[in-house]
Length: 302
Image (cartoon, rainbow, N blue to C red; front, side, top):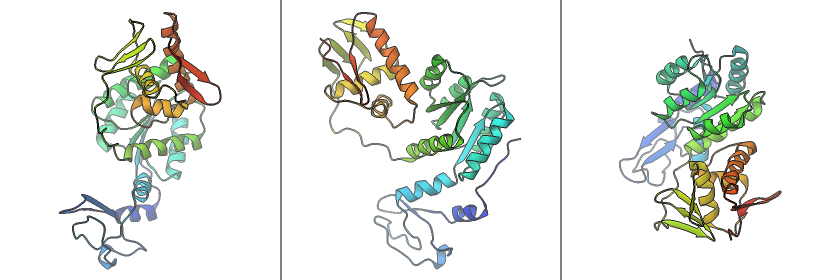
């Protein structure tokens, strides 16, 4: 059975005081919680913009709300090594997360269906159903953030894990502090409001020198010759082509490629870029330049 650990009775009491008021008219949801240990009935009313007349609450900023939600977030850790699970459980519980455990892929899917976690830390090498298959199964029904955890150093495994829907990858041995930081970053991004849609339709094709991207048919061409790319590789080129003179950092490039902020390692970014360059090098092309210490930009593509 999985074991749950809370951040302590005080935090649980605070979480129970969280109030979500759905306004009858106005801006939608008002987020608030009573202050100073008072009950909702004793809290002085404070008007919130667009609250439709809702009272007896104190308003929270979005950042405060994310902080409170993170404190009560539930993390499912999936690893067949009890020692690794102990380390993960201690680090995450100490950071204020509720933790549920599973030691194999089958149990992980059962735990996920039972507790609906906010994030999954998933080992790649699992008995029975491995982590890759667990990720595929989860992605068929959920967009929950998934942080892959593995001692495997093969670049292909890292890339496959990210391509099938993983949000980040950290190798063993790992720093518990770094893992907790990545978990917090993934939850923060998952809770962020969706970006506003563009005001005008994007062009159907992007061109720069001999390089053309057909956005409708998701095709990359160099001087008329098609180059087969993965979705992430296509996204990298699309980001670079949007502003051909701009120098992109690794983080900016991957955020643009995925369409949302993702926390990934430098090795993962370099792996995508190395594979992209190899595909174009096979036809004598070099569409991307490296500016050491700064990032990447589009070449003249002449």
